[in-house]
Image 1: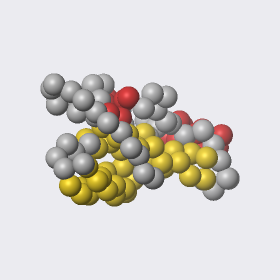
Image 2: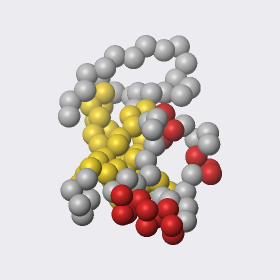
Image 3: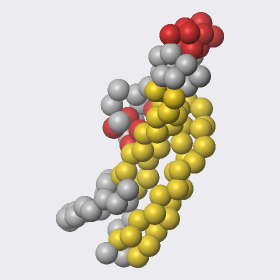
Length: 107
């Protein structure tokens, strides 16, 4: 999807990131999260291609896994900022869930 954005900054620290949330139907037809990922936006002019490693939160116990499968409500982040920040993610259990490739045309 084309996105037209202009940024102005005196310091590139914490340069903007694109957070990707992918949803899709499960076996019962419920929309569930299929993966989260984030990538920093490049700031040099030209065409850039980035591959985003996707991950999905996982339940910690077998009872929680069964309950989430049975009810169709799987674990997901309520705030997308969690994906872009490293703070607090070391205690979150996640599973790798594939890749998304994104292309940037920076002017």
